[in-house]
Length: 292
Image 1 (cartoon, rainbow, N blue to C red):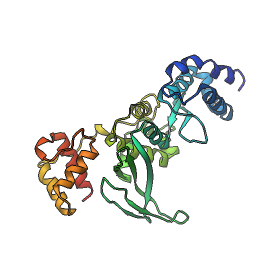
Image 2: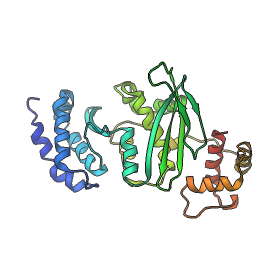
Image 3: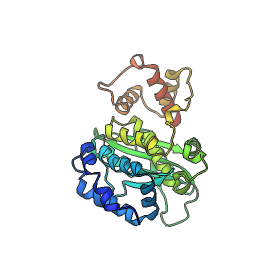
Image 4: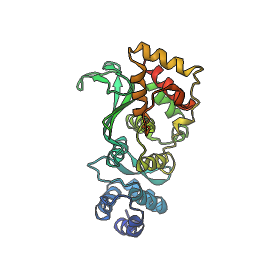
């Protein structure tokens, strides 16, 4: 674009980029070219960068700080124009990638479920059964799930209904603003990202993933309120609720304690309700109730 030297502008960020670099497998030589290509292929993106160069600079530096690549073939992260600035956007695949390369999980997948699919939940510690015709009419989306395999070999599954996903969308500042929003232009991507973000709260801690999610909710301008800010139902007698759910599933308390210790990544497995905190009891009761 006339008046904006894309190559010169991107090239001048080399010092700040290398200072912020969190993953040595991410190299300036490659990311510089990916960034230049992004600006050259999108005139509007270049126009926004010219009008707000500091936002473009921050977006490029965030690539290094988070440790993600702009390689378009990987589909992990992008430079996007939003709210008068250039922002680093990270896809749901990018979030799963960060968790995987950091060692928190071995692999993960996130899929949407449609009305004509066959879907069966197999519990929080197992992958669900999901069958569908990829080339036929699957109907409207009714929900979605994210299943990951942890470094210890355990499976963790997070499920969200379409109503839960849309409740998050309705709380999004970008959606409520009435302006352009990723929820309006790419609902499916945002739905998957929402499921991954909520599910990640129960995975082994991963600083790079935490940083990426924080970035998306703040500097990334997605405007997503933290899911934890929603008031959760208080279960009056969580132990009795857990025991009832265990009985309905035909499982034993020993199996429950083994699952809970694995899901919460406790340093030592527990064998009694007496050692569980109120927060842990409430969490377990809600999870067990959701899969009854």
